[in-house]
Length: 202
Image (cartoon, rainbow, N blue to C red):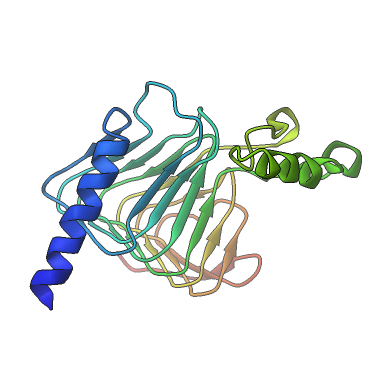
């Protein structure tokens, strides 16, 4: 069974590399597990995703717009989670991200009803024409901002990290938290929205 699973993982990685070979920089010294997937909408010639050495990656990376970029450092673990970018997500070295997390560097829709009222109709029309569902999306009204997860941080299961957030060095985000503002280095935060619970002795 292990041999079959290992072969499946190699085949899956080869397919991803073949399809997106001009857009990825994946270290061969990292492990890409069963749920590893890359989804690039309407790609252009650029590097969308880079992953460093000795990482364990079991997550999905989605680039909804040409401007998206995700950078993963060395010795990073990302469980079965989803990272969605139209701006930039930077994950430094020695970070642990558990499963069922969502890291999302934009709002996806405008907060103004007038600006988003046709979003679903546009999506439906794209699907009806067998095009990518968001190929006709109005990105000019969608707010985005980079996300930065500093080294040695630990992101618990089910955490949501929203646009413009920096998670400081060595910080811990408790399971199920929703992070909407910066997290200071060497603190534990939790809740919705996440608040400081305590500081960590380095």
